[in-house]
Image (cartoon, rainbow, N blue to C red; front, side):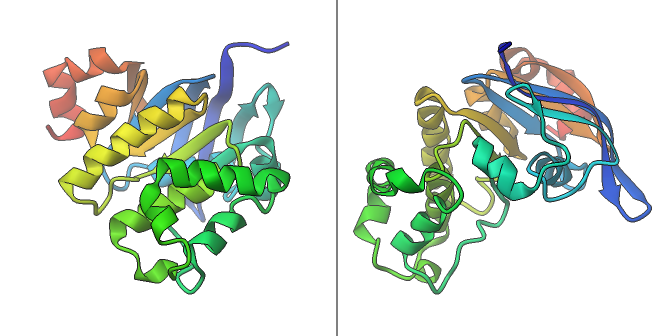
Length: 238
């Protein structure tokens, strides 16, 4: 039976070696929602992303995607379900062309619609269309981020995790990026936005969670969190 919840994380513990990074995390993302996870460096945001997407195994807890438990599935199986992770640092293939990088995004999912999805990505990112034969490593930082997101979209995600997508971008490109996130959501793709850019994340998100020392210390409507100066000062350094 389908509920309004696409991704549900319950009691999640995760870490590396003897270090526990996440300590009992609960999170939900609904169909068509933009949910922001906010926090400073080192609080566990990337560990959360890596555990949800199957790169790291949780020590305890349950991760459900569209009603099915996925915490023991492989990253490839999770991708095949439509949960796509665009990691921090872009992770493009620098010696391959823009077009080749995009096509790799449909390797596990939506291969039969590769051409149509490539056209869709080019419609969203005209600059990638202009540079489709260019080696990805010669793109600007902003263009590489477009390529990383475009490659994720090639897999027809139902939920896309964006890990620090604005990192290192100019203010103008950051504005473009957040407008793009709203466009992706308007196309019916849920977005889990994991960011340090608090102000703009809260402007586009429906709901937000604040992560501190491996636990969520606050969650709620993004507008309410954005309007609370004490909250932002205490947990977000603003």
